[in-house]
Image 1 (spheres, helix red, strand yellow):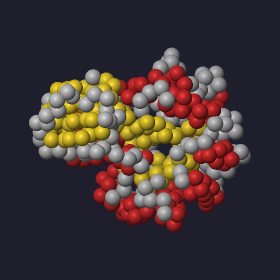
Image 2: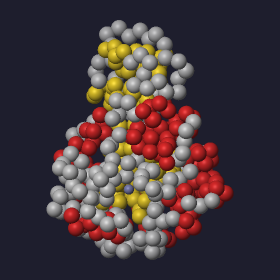
Image 3: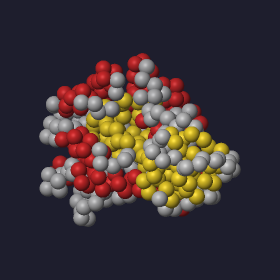
Image 4: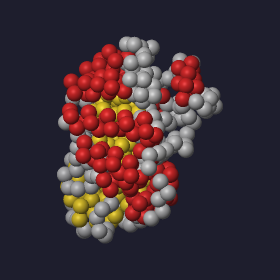
Length: 387
Ligand SMILES: [Zn+2]
């Protein structure tokens, strides 16, 4: 593998310009004026060097990306979207490996190097989605991990729990949940079931929690408590967590302290007008905040590009961030926060870290989020993919 020397960039978190020398897929040196005879030198003078972007929450198996435009046909209720998805997925060939490959290639071209995808598992689909995501992921240099996701209910959809267990046995990295109260109507049994699976198979937990207000806040407490009791710090994520964006500041602060103490991450997509968890409150308490697209051009909604800088912009905008250091928190969610939530090892820009990098034509992180310029270079495990 050829050594690569990125000359004169601005690595995020480093004061002043520095060179980045990559050897054998790993960052070897970050310093000014590095000499590396024989290395391929890429001039990135004045440009921002970031660790690879992390999409911590998407649904690759649902995507229609890369195919002909499909007018959105669901009504505006959750039940309407679920019904539309079930009714039309067969007709539209979902899950589709070629479409997932198209989407992963787009994500990679934007500098995403790691993805967590929630994959539908139910008695109708079985593990077909899991296998299709694996097949697509093998074709694109993006690290993809999956969440076995009971999109159509867990307790309310007999046979689903057994399939989640089969998915974990087959190597799926995380077990998902879905509104333990709002959808499944029995939060204690729902959470006991998925935390039991996580404990038995050493899996991560990532729960879709749309339940709002005091109901959702109570479920946040239940998840926090189970994580603490089972010692699963760093392995549990609450996705969406609308309730955190709805309760008052005092309660949000208290919940944030609990989440930080138990090691539970929060992942947001900041889509449409849905509530966004209070990023500054969570970060100030020490909670890991991650970011992802959620659906990308699928039967649930027509939006999404695969570009995590765009997603970070939406998060900053929805959070009413204007100051550079605030906007930077959104970029942190799309990079380091996602990496922590997913438990990625060797992530970052320090010597010894994996050389998953993206170079952006911007002078600062805030400018990168606001302007979202083209990516000058994307590198995965030391290999230059786009330049
Ligand atoms: Zn989702």
